[in-house]
Amino acid sequence: MTVSTALEGHVEKVARSLLGMRLRTEFEGRATEVMLTEVEAYGGSDDSASHAYRGPTQRNRSMFGPPGTLYVYRSYGVHWCANIAAGPEGRGRAVLIRGGVPLEGMAVMQQRRGRADQLTDGPGKLAQALGINGSHDGTNVLDGPVRLLARHQDTPGIVATPRVGISTARDRPWRFVMVR
DNA sequence: GGCAAGATCCTCT
DNA sequence: GAGGATCTTGCCA
Image (cartoon, rainbow, N blue to C red; front, side, top):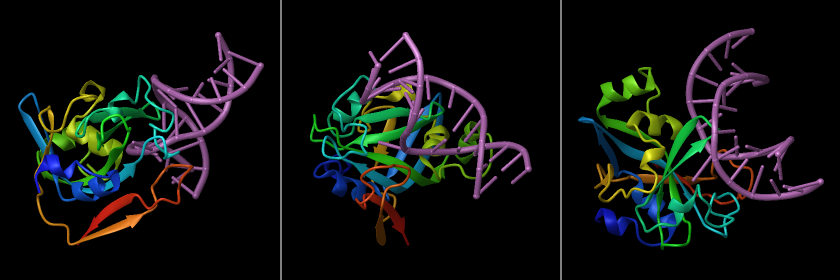
């Protein structure tokens, strides 16, 4: 499966497809790369927990872009969180990147994070470790500075659980975690 | 125009 | 385990 085809179809399927794939950034000659192990699917106007629930705004417009559009938002005024729009364009569906395991650029991640442990085990931490911030909002992971790459390894098992940190629509098991 | 809440993380107790 | 940091958005007056 190619990267672009993995971004097609229902957001729930896209979220599953992203597990095991690699997310790579390369800024100022410093490359970092992780394998995605934890994601969450968010719908559009039919998902009350989604930022896109009330339609496009100045902040969330990237969610409504074509598949592969990067949606970066500030969480609690402190952290950056990265999503990948899943399309179809205009529906506001996206996959939140919640966690991964470092593959390359450990030293860079440790420097950005200011610590040696817990580099990429949360949405805000992963974005910080990869150097993702608001300036990358609206870029595309197929040809932009933040690049989604082919699968690092197969995913032996995927566990679906309720999403984390939200107060509505908790009944949807749209959080997907890779197990081995 | 003001206010409350939020897809989080870190530090301190 | 609890609380603070810090800013954008949506809702209501």
